[in-house]
Length: 511
Image (cartoon, rainbow, N blue to C red; front, side, top):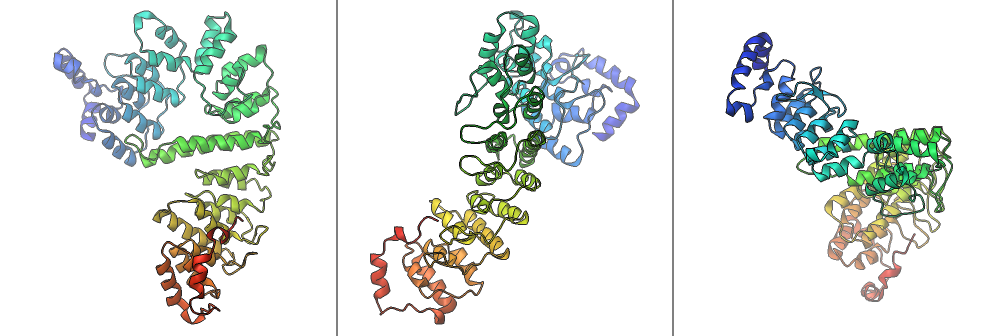
């Protein structure tokens, strides 16, 4: 391909002559257009998008930075040939959705990818490009509402949900605007928990990230008090936030439960992160990481605007939670967001580590991040449970513990012990972390804690006898490790009567 590209550059006139001849042939004119040899195109990207597989395009981009030739845009090629999977790959590698480029074929001018996708009636491509925040030229609305164009209804619906539609409607159809805007914007808004923030056209425009529409509505009738709505906006949150603050919105306003705009922004970020598919045919692990990075950058930009405008990152809601609590306690917690919050040098609440012990998939990484940020690993609850008690007890909420989760728990326990958390301390019930690990049949945790050479409690076999799963295996591990230190303090057979009569619900109570 490189050799062919060099030949095209060296003999452009000869290649043009070949193109002119082939263009008159039916087979080449309609099925295999020879326009890839035109010097105005990016030869490599044209060939890879038009003729190459998704895998070949990915391999090429793994070895080469995406730097299209001046005047071209590979997304335009993908739109011209209706290549949805190629479009996803190009977007994930940084292709610019709002740059013009030459289209393949007899299209002589430069176009936006969205224009070409609509011309090709490629519904999936239109949705992809709009989701990537493609701008919508005004002429496209006129094209789409023209009966002569026969644009698919799904494309028209997608365009009507854009910010530019409302601006176009304002400019060209300035009659009874507010009811029209209310209806059109509401078609694109879906919220599981409706509340009093979403009941006017401005609320809906803010929640959907329609910056120009919101600014227009504020300029005519509406009072700007909608910081909380924009905190959970899925589109243009930073731009919207800055515009509302500039118009006089109060960054100190809170929800009825005490959540500040920063609480809501973090909840919204976690919800969007949860919606990103981890594996699909069209979404590689690389593109997944890049999508996470885009979300994290957008959140940090929004958070900085809020904090610089006076929003307190250490304010508590009615549950006593600061925004950092929200960032660490969800299963989809973002380590990058937690690191950003720690960089603000806010006082760390004493219960921050127990909160992160609920975030199972990233528990170990979050624990280490918080400890490195100054979290107190020696903190205990009112009944004497330390972080090791809590980490192991939290497994009771997991009905089916996978080997993967068990491995993550061992890593968490190791981090806590290495950071100074005492593995031999007793809570108010006289239980050490080892008691709880034994009772709940965490074999890997038991083996690790025994390797620490901590004194074995004299009643540790009683916990093993009450651990119905893996009972025999636990007893063997304990006896084989330090048989000479075990002292039951009962007559032969007493431990078995105790095992039959014990009420298991009282062994490990709430902490």
